[in-house]
Length: 429
Figure 1 (cartoon, rainbow, N blue to C red):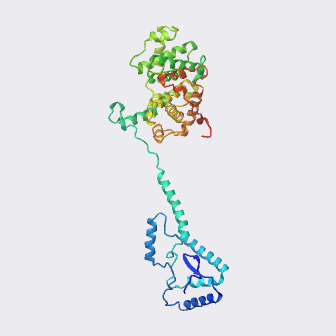
Figure 2 (figure 1 turned 180 degrees about the horizontal axis):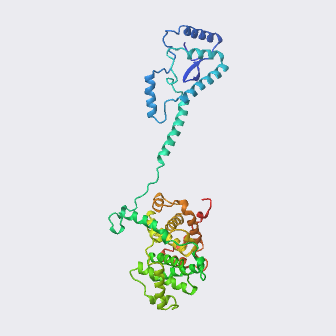
Figure 3 (figure 1 turned 60 degrees about the horizontal axis):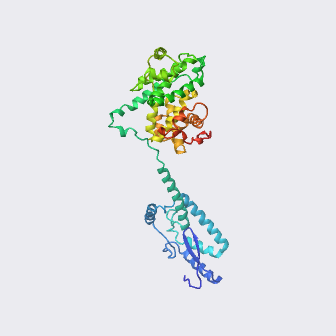
C-alpha cells in the first residue's frame, strides 16, 4: 500500500500500535478493505505482515525491562497497568469505530494480522502515555521509599565518653550510682501535706524562710549542694517534729549549719549565724537545736537532692552556661513553693532542664538522650514544667523575690530577665 504526500495519514494509537488511515474516496477505501481481507484469508502459515511495528521477542522484551529497571523513570509494566492497557485499547477502538466505521474495519484487520505471533500482555510494548503515568507513579513510590529511609531514629549519645580518662568522673560506676539515687530518692521525699500536723506554722511561713535562706546562702557564697540539702533537712525535720513559730528561723539556720558541715570545706561559725539572725538566738539554743535535728533525722544527711540529678541531666542536655543558670533559677524558684514537694527530686531536675531549654530556644525541645538519662518523657514533665513557667512569670512580684534578685545580677548573667516560655502554658500541647 503506497501512501502519497497528497493523502497524509491520521495517526491513531491503540495498544501501542500506530496506524495510518488516509482521507480518500470510498473506492480507495474498498480497495484497501479487499486487500486486508485477502491477507486475513491467507493468515495461516503466512509470514508476518511487514506493517506490524514494534514486534519483540520475549528475550528482547526482558532486556528492555532490565534497562527500564535500571532507569528510575522507566519500569516494566505491571499486571495492574496491563489491565488498564486493555481497557484503554477497547475504549479507543470503540470511539474510533463510532467516528469512522470503515476505518475501524481497517484497524480490526491490521490488529489481528499475525495471530500466530500475537504477543501476550507482557510482550506488548508500553505506550508512551502509560510510560509517563507509570514514571510518575514510580517516582512517587521512590520518594516515599527515600522519605522512609531518611526517617532515622535519633541516637542516644554516650555522654560519658569525654570523661573516660577522668578518675573523678567514675565512668565505670556512674550508671550504678544514679540507679541507686533513683532507688533512694523516695526516702528523701516528705509528705505533701505534712504542714497539717503543724499547729503554729504554715506553708507561707516555710516559703518566707527558704526565700530568706537563699539570700543568706548567696551572701556566704556557699556551694549549690549546700542549699538543696538545707531545704531537704528542713522539710524532713518539720515532717517529724512540731515547731513553734518563733523557733522556725532557728530551724533554718541550724539546717544550713548541718548542710555546711556535710558539704563545705570551710564551715561558717555559730557566731556568724547568730549575727545573721540579728542575735535572736543564743549559742546554746543553736547547739541544742542541732542535737535535736540530727537525732530526729537519725544522722542521715546522705540523700539524693535535686542537685544530684541536675548535674547529670545538664550533662545529657549538653548544656552551656546560660542553660545551666536558667535551670538553677527555675529549680530554686520551685524550692520556695510548698506545692512542689509532690514531685520527686529527679522529676524536679528534669523539668527544670526541660523548661530552661524551652525558655532559651523558644520551642519545645527534649532529645532522646535527655529522655534516656532522665527516664522521663516530655509528657511526664509538662505538669511540673508549667508550674515552673508560672513561678517564672511571677518571680518579680509579691514579697518573695529573693531568687529573682539573686539571678538579676551580673554574677548569674541576668538570667531572671529572660522571657518565660509562655507557650508551655497552652493546655492543648
